[in-house]
Length: 86
Image 1: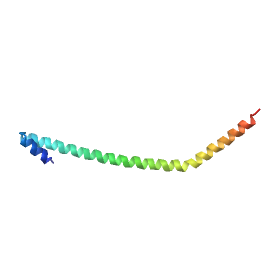
Image 2: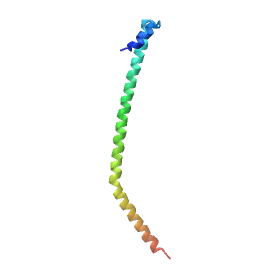
Image 3: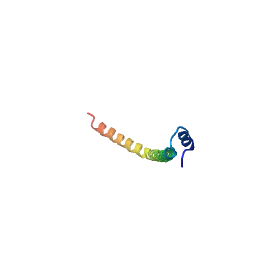
Image 4: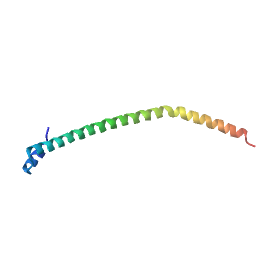
């Protein structure tokens, strides 16, 4: 595959058909690489969003348990400090 506009412009500028065709193919290949990169970035973005969503859900599920544990420890510490009071 070649980029016809580039090929035509190179021929008009005096490049040989061989060089114009090679340059046009190189540009077409680069366009394909950029398309692949865009696809990879889009897939990565979707994975990151999914991972963040799963993390948020897990945090929300575990907050009540964590909060209960912290409150229990604070009550224990309050009791311990109260019994050590002069």
